[in-house]
Length: 551
Image (cartoon, rainbow, N blue to C red):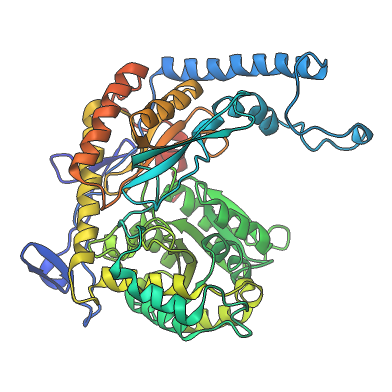
């Protein structure tokens, strides 16, 4: 929330943000459109306060949430007793009789939760889609005769459901039209698969063209593309760090970053989400004390963060992280899976969003699965970094190369965003996404919902809390032809179940108003309007005062 002094109230504290003179940033304004002048390499500067919200729920909501899980747990144990006694049929996976003396495979809390809670509301996930994931899509209707253990299709198609869940930020994942002619031509010339790795016979001219374009788009020296976004993190981080290195990872980092860090063999330490005091404390300790036992200096210290966090809707505090990185001589790895194409005046991600120099980030990572309507990922940065990964990356050595039609789809999408197609339609999409995001978030705030994240983030989490309301929320909205993604434990903390809306440039104002009207009614029906404009629901994660450093 902006204050009268030009700062912002973030996590219960007022922050002021330095403003730069627009005449010095290399931008030109024409017809109200800000364009980046690429010739001089100077990006725009973000002059607005950074506004993020993590409001706490009222006490009674948290009490009823935990009470709901407690009652569900009691009935779960009762039903497990009935299953073990043979009174109730058990449809879940169980150990075979001859393995009863082995270490159990299925008897843990998450499996207990899956059997007794998740299964009752499982119809809200894995819904089969039978069209392109545009602003509207079609859903195959299914029903269950055994309380969601199995499903059967009715043969009915639910047409023209408003898509509020896909990562189709710029609306480029659509049905075939004439603008995709180049993709069809590449399919006819190259086929679908490459049938080889990049190290062998799998490097095509299309891959080289795409890599050069990515480097140009990000304003870095070089880039390398991979066929799978998840593997771009999990298979490349072990090539960059190893034993004797230290990874400082944001606690809300994506599973691919977590897996890559664990596979690397490096020491991992977690800092509180977007909390600079917590990060600096770890950096200071790492520099002062070095490695455990030996006290030798760390070979490398790598800070790993995301651009936009997909469950919280927050944006990384990049300026302060870069300042700490330079102060303590660490490296910075940033995952822009959700931010590339979706934030920044021309869609170039959080570096452009904050007006930073791309050279301030050591390793850029991003995926083509969101804004570009395709698949795969990239690593970009200095040429020597990329050349090193071409030799040492597990994805380059062992994984099949990116499909040529996918590469061409990314090329045409990126040229569209950059304006290399001769139009400004790509820039207009980026601007429309920003307008839709601000409008949707503002209306939800006015209605009284608790929503998380940055006001510029197209990922909008709406807190539901109670498991019963999670199911009712998704089912009622589907009945109104609105498709949403609901998320709960273990993807979120147990008491912070939520609906996650992904805004798209393809959403019209009428579509958003239809969704907002339904949400307004649903909020009244299910009593979801919890907002009282307080600070973080988890102050220990966001309140920096608990991490004061000694002088």
